[in-house]
Length: 69
Image 1 (cartoon, rainbow, N blue to C red):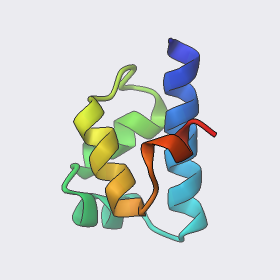
Image 2: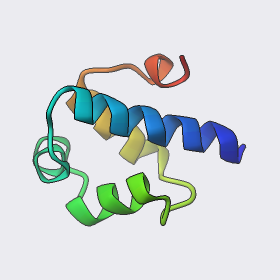
Image 3: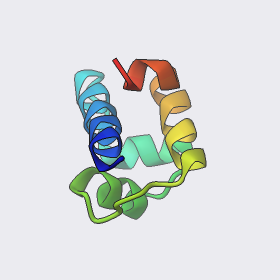
Image 4: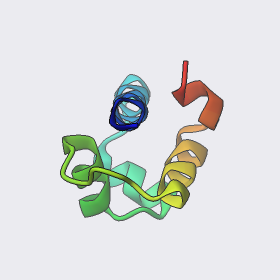
């Protein structure tokens, strides 16, 4: 299970960076706090809430399915 979460987190970070979006801007457009995004991307949050992942995907304009590819 941990490898799936790591893959999801990595994909979110890669997608954010590929769109040239900062963590602060992603927080603004997603409604997920900057500190939460930072904790998710650095691995301090081991199991991010599904709703937070959905909110980040929506802000990045990607689907949950895209995270699994």
